[in-house]
Image (tube, rainbow, N blue to C red):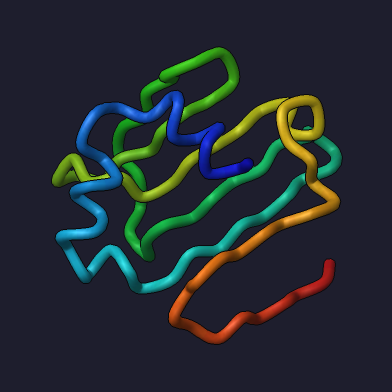
Length: 99
C-alpha cells in the first residue's frame, strides 16, 4: 500500500537507480513528526541540497550529485495509514525505536 503510493508519484528511474546502486542501501529511517503531521523517509546519510515537490505535499530531497536522499510527506496521516507498516521480503534486521 505505502509503496504503491510512493510509486505513483516518483520521477521515472528513481527506484531503478536505487536498485542498481548499492551505496543507496545504507539504511532507511522513517520519522513521523506529529506536531506537523509529516513523515520523513531518510534514504542516505548525505545532506540534501535541492528539493522538488512532485505532488501536493510530497517533496523529494536530492544531494549535490542529484541522488535521492529523502522523501518528505506533509499531512501524512491523511495520506497514509500510519498505524501499520508492512515490510515484505527485506533481507535485513528490523529495528524499532520509540519516541
